[in-house]
Image 1 (cartoon, rainbow, N blue to C red):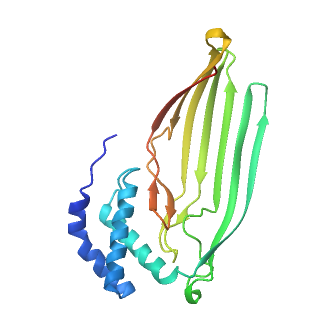
Image 2: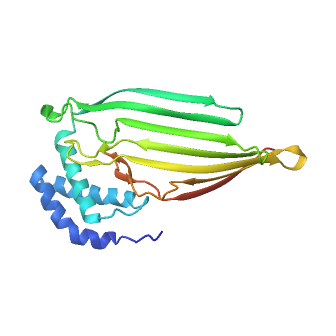
Image 3: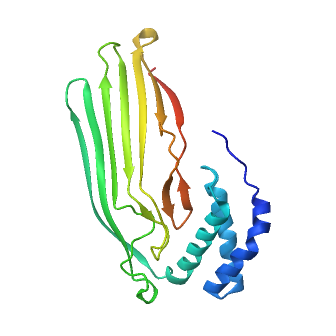
Amino acid sequence: MSVQTIDIAGLYIAEQGRLKRLVRRLVENRSTADDLVQQAFEKLLRTVEYGNPENCPAYLTSTVRNLALNHIYGVEGKVRNRGLELNIFGELTDELRLLGGATFMDGVQTKTLNGLTDGKKAIGIPDTQINLGAEWDTPFITGLTLTGRAIYTDSQYASIDNTQSIPDWTRFDLGARYTFNWQNGKPLTIRASIENVFDKSYWAAASTNFGLARGAPRTFLVSTTLDF
């Protein structure tokens, strides 16, 4: 997978004037507008650590608008979360195990300034999150266990006025671990896994603090555990 480097300095020169004019129409304060634009570029810098946004000017426009709305409406606001969390674990056979959980959450804004966004959904709180995993101890190689996991996260709002959101996403992971006796009979475990098997591109989360977080691309992980 190729990764393009973003010229942050050049982007700032090209976009900062437009963004400041946009924010000034909302907050009507030059100094505050300048600060919010600076914060938007800081969020962009943190975002590119996880992968570059597909459209940086659009990302900056969305981020700076949300920052301005948070500044106007969000100072006095609170978030009320009510929900239910379920977890399961069980053995279907001696070799096959299932584990997972589900969270159902209703996150809404309350006590916002003049009640302007009371009752609207909170930023970054999906209604539903589900994960389901399985482990299988293979009969053909003693000590070898194959694993799989599916993760689903519902859509999330990315602005306090609920006009912007990121879509729901599903990710699949696969893995294996092999345990055998090393020197002096001490167990050694080797683990390997692939996260995001299908290399899906998606926005993983929204937040008032860091903006949007992009999901990691297909990732290979290897680790070893040795008992002394």
